[in-house]
Image (cartoon, rainbow, N blue to C red; front, side):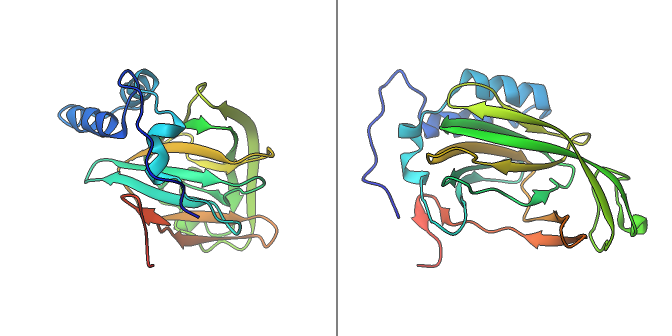
Length: 210
């Protein structure tokens, strides 16, 4: 359900327009994980500033597009209690996540082996799917709460699962470079991996497909 009308933020607080404009300025130079991490830490967005991009549903978390061009994809993801992603890759792309409301836990994994090594385009980091025997090992978990911490993915740590293990709704802000429309998901119970197409629940503050 969509929230109330947009809330005016304090002029000293970052707006989503400010945030996107700053990212576009960074496109003039080489995009690196430390550079964007430093930028996001310096330009925190509170839940009020993201209000137009906050949508909830009971069945699954929502992916809500804020901005996208050839180099950057910016979105909120809204998590009701207990919601989580599949274990998935990021196609070797760079990614950054902060939390504007609540707390999110990211479980990080390492690909051990599978019975379809010929489908790995980057050995033990990313693959094209198709395996029916998997060894994916959890190597740690990182908590990221409102106003504190940041989770990143890169070419060396690209497999993870994100979970709202708490009892309240959470809002996370994600930046990816470059944008991507699918990923490999791992189902350890059924011992398979497969390419999963990604979609948005809303774009530019409007519900998709309604």
